[in-house]
Image (cartoon, rainbow, N blue to C red):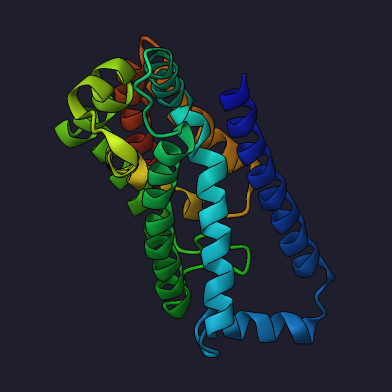
Length: 252
């Protein structure tokens, strides 16, 4: 219960931030005058380069959003680690606290957030994003959908997903002792999870980086793909659907 409460608290806090940030950006967009909208658009298309503070703000946004989306998908693995930790403590052979394992996992997604922020910066410079961080290019949106769909069908995707779907097997094959060992296990789990889901995160630019329903839908898909018995087959079906939608969008 303590572990679940902690994970729920982290996830809830992250989602509260994401919701508030989405409402703030929506309010700014609606409340803009024509002049301020024009100025904002100039910044978006790269006529006004990002400041260090703006890059840092976007980085925080991505990092917290990744926590909100991905920490829940690591709950099964975290609970198995916590069970091992409890058993080890009873046998007077304590292992590193569970939060160390989770910290390694979060670090991987924080590093991904740096790459995502840099990608957003480059898309802004190329005038491919709206002020609400949605692709305004049919070509870009279709390419992201088709790319995500194709990746769903690749052996690399399913190899990474297989590790994420088998907590006991993952821990038995990758167990490392000590605090550094637990952190490394979290890093490895995060790496497998990243390998499984990184292309899906590109779809945020299709539906909107601050579109709450879209964020929730991607989060739910990742979670269900990891925990449902037919998650592997669902990934194939979803991949084919993404390719079809992307191809139709490109053809219209």
